[in-house]
Image (tube, rainbow, N blue to C red; front, side, top):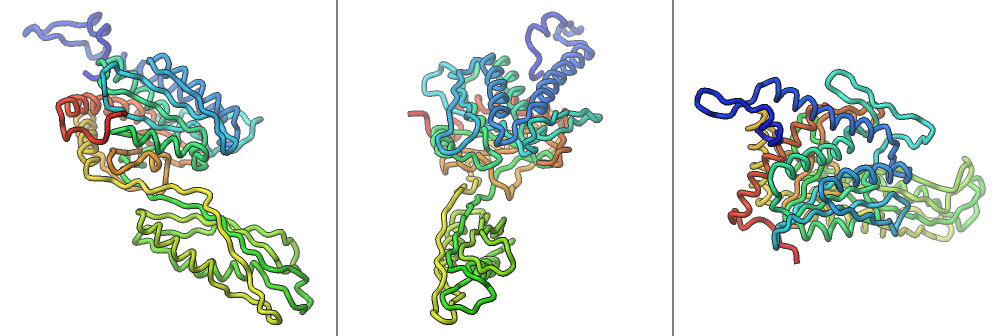
Length: 430
C-alpha cells in the first residue's frame, strides 16, 4: 500500500484467519482523505499569493514558502539572484542520499504566473466540486504541490538511493531569462529530469516540446512628411511589411514550423508621417534543430533583401536583428522511452487508467535541461484546464494520483538502476 506510514499500520492493524495483516477500509479512507486535504490547503495558500512574473515580491514569497517545505524534507536550499533582468530569485535545493556516486535526479517547477499584476486585488481560490479554481492554480502551483506530495511519499517510504535536486524558476512564463545557462549545466549533470508543468487535459505526460526563438528586427529608413514629394525619404514600415509577407510563407504546420508577428512598434503616431524606424517582434517555433537552422537562413535572406527605395536617390532601408530568447527543442531519445513506459505502467497499475506520451507545441524550462545523454519528460503537474486565464482550474484528485504514481515509479526505478538496468542513462556527477 503506497504512501501509508508504518505508524498507521501498527496502530490499526488486524489479522485475518491466515495470519495476514490487514487494515480496516475506513482507516485507509480516513488517512487518504486527510492526506488529500493537506495539499489542497497548501494549494489554496499558494494561489492566493499574487506571483505574476513581474511582481517580484509575490514571486519571492512563493519561493520562500516552497523552500520551507523542502527544508522539512532534508533539502539544503540556495537562492540565486538574476544578473540579467528584474525577477524573483531562483530556488535551487539539493538533497544527498549518502550513497557515493549516486545518480542525480532533478525535479523542475516554477512559481510565477500569468495572472494580472494588480497588487491591490485579492486573489480568491474557489472550490467547485472536485475542482479548485483560480489564476495559476494549474500552471504551475499544482505542479509545486504535486512535487512536494511526491517527495513526502518517496522520502518517508524508503531511504532514497538517488541524489535529488529541485529547481523552481521565478520567471518561467517569460522564458526564465538569466537562468537558462544554469538549467543547461544542471541538466548535463542529471541522468533524469522531470518537469511538473501541467499534464494535458487528458492527463497525458509530455515527452517532446517545440523550441522557440524570439527575433527583434529593426528596420531603419528615412522619415519625413508624407504629403511632400521630396528626395531622400524611404518608409521603414513599408520595407518591414514586404519582409513580413515573405516570412509568412515559411509557416509549415505539417513540419510544426511557425512564424508569428506578435507586434510592431514605430515612433510615428500620425497619418501623414513617413516612419524612419520600425521594430518587429517575431516568435519562431520549430520541432528540431535542423528546422531552426533552416528558418534562420531564410530569415537572413529576407533581411538582406531590399524592397523599398527612394524614387529620387534609390536609397534603401537597413535591417538588423537581435535574438532575445533562444530555447532549444525538447526531443525524445530512445532511452527516454524505457523510463516513460515504466511510469505509465506504474500509473496504470495504481489507477487502472492508461496515460500516453504526447508532444507539446509550447516550450518550457525543461527544454534547457535536455541533453542527448539524459532523460527528460514533463507534464507531471496537475490536470485541469483554462490555463493562463483567471478561471484556470485543476482537478484536486489529480495531484495525489500523480504523486503516488511517481512514488511507485521511483521504487521501480531504484530497482532498475541499481541493478545496472541499461547501465542507467546519462553520467554520474563529476
